[in-house]
Length: 264
Ligand code: 6PG
Image (cartoon, rainbow, N blue to C red; front, side, top):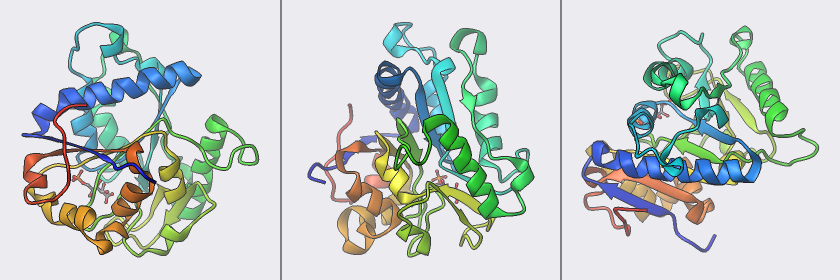
């Protein structure tokens, strides 16, 4: 991939939020124009909170600056195999931080695709059933090789993991499945499902949102070293080129050698 990812840096999350909003809403507009909906995959961690900061602010009232949640279809980039009201559930996190706070009268209501609780005991079954949900929305597996999310919103773990794709894990070699299961996640809880690397790389746009001085070491690896390029975040950063954007802050990028910008 010839072109480099876009790295945006801000003094902090509050200063980042308006640009993240502008970025997400630009993808919203382009996606609705393309196919009438906006298909988004979200992860856990600090992302739902940051997203809420970006999306729940008032905006200027223009169509380009209005969130049209009725057109959103939200999937989980990864999910833990726990009940939907469990503290470890990414669905619960998104619900608490964002979904429950949407003014539905004014901005509509997204269609959300959580995992199905009846399959929690068997992570592989949970993954297979989630893949079926994707098939029902994107297309039959025999008609498209990979589903294409309009936007995939990701975090970056301190070890360079993203979704539930962990460094050097055999799941990184998967070439066919859309949704994978993992039962030995190095980070608890151990049973999870995740988008596969090919699905992430196929996303129309991919954004990493990762801030704070705690990200400095992993950023140095990802942007400056060969080993870092082989980590899950590095593979996406390299493999998807300028489809990738990083929303980060000055503390995370201090001493990291990568060109950055402060606006879209
Ligand atoms: C997990 C976490 C994890 C998280 C990253 C980034 O399931 O292991 O959700 O993937 O998204 O560690 O976390 P922050 O957004 O809090 O930096």
